[in-house]
Image (cartoon, rainbow, N blue to C red; front, side, top):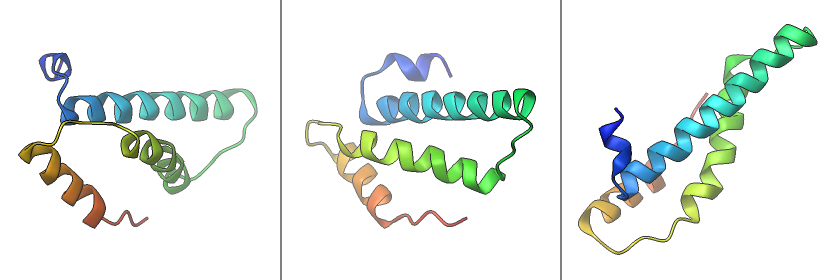
Length: 82
């Protein structure tokens, strides 16, 4: 997994963004549960992560390539359902 993050291609950059947001919000949820006894359902947590990642992924500027076009099509056509 570490070798995948050395690249600067679109997939590698997107993976870093998603991983970072996932770790941040899961750790935030862990602290809420431990210190305030508040709990959010897993679906709500996932929705929060996806909503924070979408604008970051949409703002990435990339050089046009076949890989970028394929990723754009997948991202635009994929619906996230909870």
